[in-house]
Length: 232
Image (tube, rainbow, N blue to C red; front, side):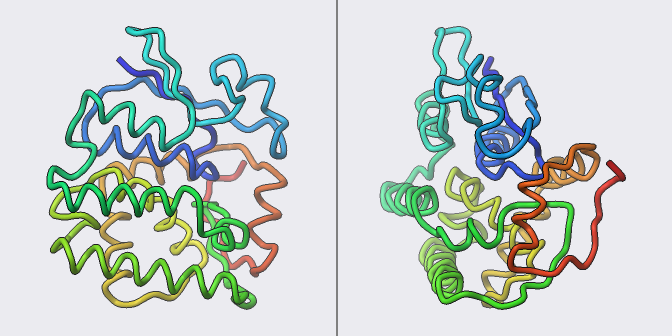
């Protein structure tokens, strides 16, 4: 069985990707939640005990004495023994891999200006040109996948790795109330309604930790409206 090491569910978008994939596809794993110990890099020493990079997520396959770090590498490793991770059709699989890789390496403004913080609701003060560009590309990409492969998920009729890669964006859109086309917003709601996403969200709201750097990032370009989390 896999062991998956993740950080705070409220903040860790990278951790969500493999977690929601394994959960939604009912692939057994043991969860190890390791809370952030401060700002970026402060958890390095602790995380280095299980992750070669000192970062999360990290998947450990104890049966084969293998540690896999980085969310994209984890997804590909799991796919070697679970073909349902990617779409079965070659064209859909190529598109899904490309879209996942784009999320992995791009959308910098969305990451920087709308960091994942599941439990709060904010109003953006303004959208930078970079964020507007990111949102336009995101909308076009999602509409392409939904139209090309028939939905209701990005690469067809079932949840696959490409949906897992965009699952953190669904939480960002909920938190920051970002505007998209009707089709894209319907897809966001479809992700948020998944039982695995509901489980993650419920756990995030119950977390007692508040990490100052993540909290400050959330309101760097926005105004706090409400906090849905339990009192920390």
